[in-house]
Image (tube, rainbow, N blue to C red; front, side, top):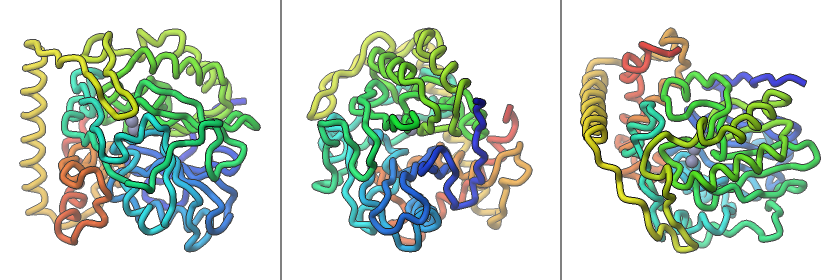
Length: 385
Ligand SMILES: [Zn+2]
Ligand SMILES: [Zn+2]
């Protein structure tokens, strides 16, 4: 059995195959997963995670293509509540009138009670890491629309599946597994691209990595979760970021990551490296102090300088350039990828929006930000290797 990374067409709205009855849509830098037979019909399938802000229409189109026009899911399951996995949630819950399920340890961040621990922009080394201080930490508030996953391990609307508690990257992170064929939906417990690097997260070369470093506040738990998933020996896995992987290579790389976790996944330094954030059913209780050093100050200065420079470049671009598809010929990045750059960088939009779906904002407030993606291409293109 060999692994074959599934090709994805970023501009297409048709979901791509992972395993029997499991497909996914890559929304710029993050995946959403559909579970259910093709053309299953209304309330006969489930959505896992809900992408970045602004993705609701695309997710709905993909769902219509996969399950039939107008068909709604029976449930939305969240692997965890980070902003890039709940972006379209408010719009989808409203339009689909659908319940949401997450682990009870994740509920404080989905019901307005607590923000996540602050990210650590100084670990991982990539642009996504450095810019993570701008990423929304939540919480969003779904009110009584969100429920705890059943304690018996079953997954609503996903018969044959069960959830595994895989915390570390988030306090209530879960992975979904189907024992019949050992398919795994792993969220960010591990990922199949180097998510800290903006270029890698856009080019999506398949390789297994630990959870995104900048957003992982408990490395001890993260390590145990990777071991649990490696021991499960998945036959196919789709993670929150990166292409699906299958077969021996998946199992071998996962086992290797598990047995070399501290060298390969745990950051060499950083706020949470040796001391986790403490969280309970009400949210964050305690976080380690930020590490302030000469290096920190220098990196922060560089980051702010880069962000300010990019903001200026964007504005110039917005003023002077008509909309053109710069995705073609930009270091091999597709147009959707360039949008991803914008999203990774233009996150102030999501932040201002509280992480909600920007598509529900009035015309004229959000579209300019999304369309300004073209302005980023000249920045992103120099080193796509
Ligand atoms: Zn995450
Ligand atoms: Zn993620």
